[in-house]
Image (cartoon, rainbow, N blue to C red; front, side, top):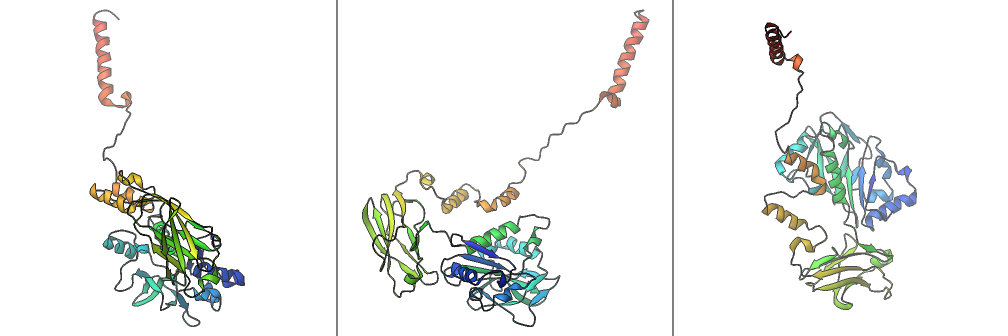
Amino acid sequence: MFQYQLVIIGDVSAAAFGANELLWLNQFVRFNGGGMIFVDGRMESYGSFRGTPMESILPVKHAAAGLTELRSLNVSLSFPKGRGASDSLKLDDDPATNLRIWNELPGPRWVAVTEALPASETLLNVKVGEDELPGLVRGRPGAGRVLYSAFDESWRWRLNVGDMHHQQYWNQLAKGIMEPPFSVQDRYIMLDSGPTSYEVGETARIRVRVMDPALFRQPNLKVEAVIMREGRVFEVLPLENDPESFSFWGETAPLEPGDHEVRVRIAGVPEGAIKASTAFTVSSNPFGELGRLSCDELLLRQIAKETGGEYYREEDMKRLLDVLGPASDRREKIRETQLWQSYWWFVPIILMLTAEWVIRRVKGLV
């Protein structure tokens, strides 16, 4: 399962998993940097995770007894006091419009009663009267990220608008929980060096995650990125340890023209044992946007701003249709009228034929 970036767990009991599977899910988040979304429901199955490896990655604590659920027709959604919407909950770029959309969304009719843990972050509250409960809670147990949803009724947001908000909501949640993928990996590391092309003078950000548990448990583990240029060593970059994600990262010196290769050295690993490597090209680009093959969002936004337009991502295409509106208000309408069904045409024709008959009669032609 370590080939995946995101796992979504619905309202299922711990009994649906084996002991090893629960441990795999825990390690998928903690050590592999995977994302996981928990969607609670009326079966109240997450209480069964108590005492299992899954309990340590949940960002909330379920009530062991007493009030464990809330049922009401008057539940509303609100952002935590003193904070606006996180990037994952922005359904519109304008803060006022985004707040209006969230205020108009139907609230859930069932909510699990939980308590957010101190190290977690509450993104959305559910409100009944003056009482507020955590609705969406995000945590980071180890290398990965976890999101807990106390309700499973986001499908109600499709009322009268289809997937306009519902699809955008889930796409953004998933994107915010998943870690950016690494380019390559082997049994020792996962490695990423960003895009495949850079301009002269730019710097490359190198990310490395150690896959072998025996290695990253070593104190003061030394990891280096060896940057090769045209087959020769360009730079040996010591990578800094990020203890929250069990990864190492560093930024290269300004790059020079040529083909580059990135390799990794780890103290204690035999030379040549690490096979994973990445490559990129550095060149001067006189043609602006034609020089970068990967998406340059900053440049696209600048172009849109200078030309009086606006930049939209692929997941925002539905909003583009609303902004564009109809190309023209003119409509072409064709109406067919039978001559014999119109008095304005029928009467003149009959009068003309009658006049012809009378004239022929007078002249003796009939």
